[in-house]
Length: 536
Image (cartoon, rainbow, N blue to C red; front, side, top):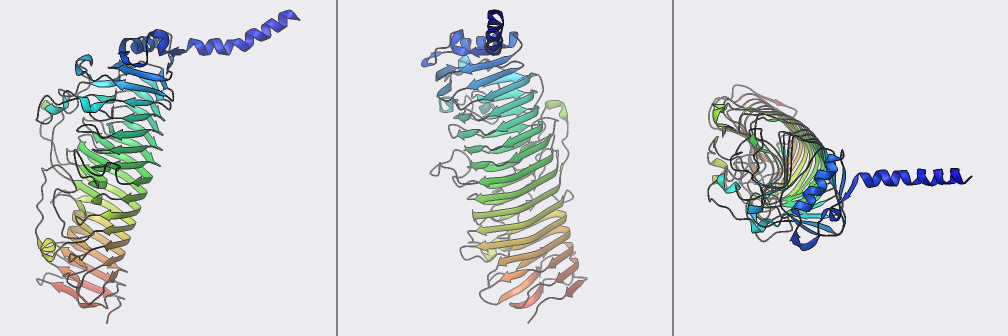
């Protein structure tokens, strides 16, 4: 009987012994956690011993742990408990110079991180604790881009890591981007809270040439871009889900680009909120109210395709939606050669509600001969500030093909709502556009657009505006079931400004409050079909 009793006791203890064998408390390896001692060596020792035993959990109990770079290994989980704070060492000399093996743009200028792993697998960082990079202590050694990257560390830098997760932590005050995931696979970022307003280039996160990525249930407030997908070498960003996140940014809250060498494909963004930053009185970059809610940009030769965005609430940024195919053509390595113009196609954006937009308007722009393709927007409501003039409507926008793709790069657009330039197979359906202050620009401008459907648009338009919709150099345009909202009779429902307008169909529109249906500056309208419109 006693033999069986002792056997029972031993069996009960086995799970505890097994747990102890994979559980490594950093204080057992010399970490003080007193907020004064540099604990780098002790933390690294705990990680290395854990890895040598096949992996396990490196645990941070309550305390303040100062550290410089910690190199993570295979099969390692960092568990940072509630009440534990990891503080980045403020002396850049204590951070070793790191140069990943894989080439990427500006690799000669980026060298430092608080946590780093390259070519590893099965890494997790979790817990209710905080990691604070104390980024305001790091100063540039050069005033010139991109050399001004070279003395400021990331908080996280993971290169070609497979099966990586970051969960529930609070991350704050990085010297550079908060998190850089470069060419990683199978990544989960879940439930983290990010605050990054301590230095230049303070992005919330950068998913760079990664595949199979889930970003869910996150909250972030950053001076620079928020949730940022980019490609700084030949690898595309692909198979990405972003959902149930709340994002604030002085620049672009949710963004594909700017670096876009490898392109983007199969991206789904759903059920997110973009709201104003709590830092409302100043900005290092961008504007306190934010530059854009959603930006999709390909300017370095990559292909951007297969992006679906749905159910997004946007409050505050100047431009809720900005799409740009440009030709910055920046190589990511010296021997790359000439970078061709990329593509931006097969994008669906739906169920967007935005308020607080500025008078810039929403611009979706390709290049002559390199059009946006298969872009479809539906179920959208946006309120703009207004304040545009007839002069703003008539000015010629530059192409700016080499410029940085920012929502402000063209200044005030010709339309207060949507301006579409150099596109084919485009649709805008079930859209509501409003403004708060006097506004004399048209609601929509189509500029060099082929095969377009504008349907179910209800938009405020001024009696002084030259038209509800302005069409320039476009063909195969159908405008249907639109309802202009006027307080006084308007000049024209539709205005043509350039040659090549052919195959124009107006169907089911409310035209009663306009002096003219069409205002044409030339005789190039070869074919206009009017079907079932409501006229005077």
